[in-house]
Length: 436
Ligand code: AMP
Ligand code: ZN
Image (cartoon, rainbow, N blue to C red; front, side):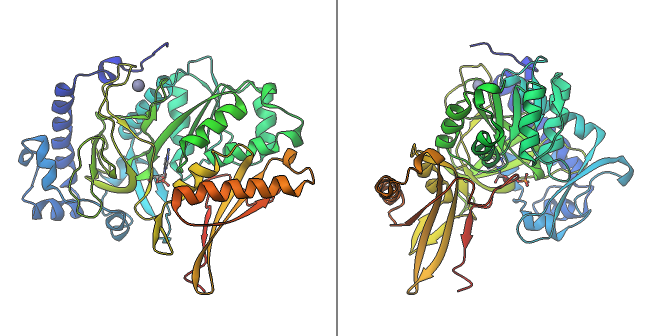
C-alpha cells in the first residue's frame, strides 16, 4: 500500500525524541498559561509558577484536570493567554446547556492547526488530484473551516459547500467529479437514501474517500457506507477545545486513528477515579494541547471513551492510535437498571443487512417501567406488501439487540424518509422518561 507523509520526520519520530519534544512544548505552554488568571491560580495551587517547575513529562500529573465547566465559568476571555489584538479567529461550541465555550487562535495557532489537518488528509492517500467537497457546516463549528484550510494546504480543490441541500450536494458531486467528502456519518447515510429520487446511483459518482467525524458511529456503519458507495471511509476525531478536527485521523490502513502526539499529550483515565490507565484499557480520553499560544488547556476531560493501541501501525507512523469513540461518560443510558450506550444499539442495527440508513432510539415509561423503542427505516425494496417478511425482520432486530444489551426493546419498522433527518450532528436519542 502506498504511504505518503506530510512531514515524515515528525510523523515517524522515535518515541524518546517525541517525549523530549513534548516536554519542551509542555514547559512552553505552562509559561504561556500562567499569563491567564485562571491557570495562574490553578497551577499555583499545584506549586507550579512557570515552565521550569515541569522537570519531567510525568510532572503533568501534578496539574489538575480542566473541564468544560471550567471553560464555561471563565467565559468569555478567562483563559485567553495573549493580547486580544493577537487573536485572529474564535470558534465556539454550544454543547447541551447553552452556555458556550469559546476557543481563540492566533495566526500561528491557525497555521499549526492547518498543518495537522494537512497531515491527516495526506495520511488517507489524498493528493492534489482530489476534488474535495466539504459538507460539514461552516461557521462557529470547527468542522467546516478546519478541514477547509488543511485541504487547501495540501492542494486539493476545495468545494466549500457546507451542510444541507441534498439535491444540490449530489449535483455538485456529479458536476465537479468530487472524489473526497468530509461529512457526518448520519448525513452520508441520508444522502444514499435520496439518490434514487435524483435518478443517481453511487456508480454515477466519482467518490473514492469520505472523512467521517463529529459524532460517534460504529465499525458496522463504516462497513455499510463503504459497501453502499464503494468507497474508503476514514474516521476523523477532534473537538473544539483542542482546535477541532485534526486531533486524530486514520491512515490508509484504517486501523484506528493516529493521534498527533507532537501536538497533544494523550492520557486515558478511569473516569470515576481519575487514575491513568495503561494502553489497551478503555477509559476517558484526556488531552493537553501543546501548540496553541492563545489558549493553552491542560488535561482536558473530553468525556469521550476510548483506548489506545499498543502495537505499531504498518504505515510507519509512530504516533499511537486511538480507538473509535466507544461512547461518552455522559451519554450512558440506564434502562431498567441496565447500562446501555447508544453506540451498542447502533452497532447492532447497522449490522442487520435489510435495515436502511436511519434510526432513532426512544425512551419512555410504560406502566411505570422503562420502555425502549427502536425505530428503524428499511430500504424501499423491502416494502413488498408481504407483512411476514417485515415481521421476521423485526424479530431478527429484536433478538440481536436483546443478545447485545440484554433488554427486550420494541422495534418499529418505518418507510425510508419518514424519520428525522440530520445534516449536522445527529440527535438520535429521545428520552422522555424524566418528563413523564
Ligand atoms: P465539538 O467540540 O462540537 O466539535 O464536538 C466534539 C465532540 O464530538 C467530541 O468530544 C466527540 O464526542 C464528538 N466526535 C467528534 N469526532 C468524532 C468521531 N470521529 N467519533 C465519535 N465522536 C466524535
Ligand atoms: Zn498508520
